[in-house]
Image (cartoon, rainbow, N blue to C red; front, top):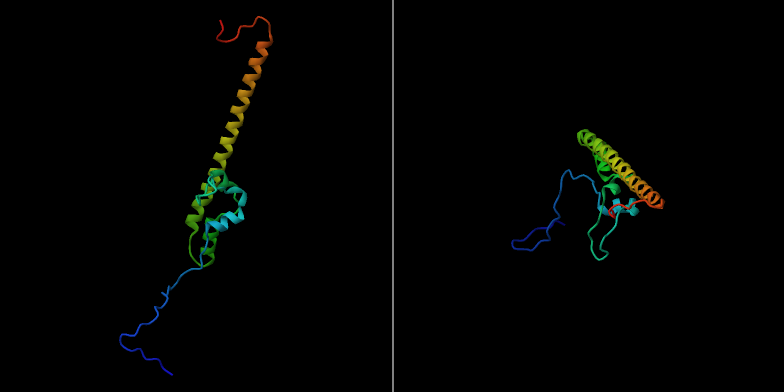
Length: 132
């Protein structure tokens, strides 16, 4: 039986048809679920998420790389963004290691200075700095 639309009849709106839509879905919840120890909420009553550089560097799962790999698998040529992303991650890791190395040396220097200062104070008659 054929359906005939009468003039002025109210029809249900059709869902919009999206042609060529890719099945791409990378919500933040997935990234958090794969790396739960690396994400925190500073305020438990807020949805605002804190992600540090260290969190990103320590994350073994990269949604950006996963997206680019999916696009590659679907026939898209996205090797440019992939080659840009990998060196940036590598550079960030080296910078993070350098900063940690420098912080460790600064802490060690302060500890040695404090130890040497206490050693000088043990000697009787040693003048304390600033006490003339």
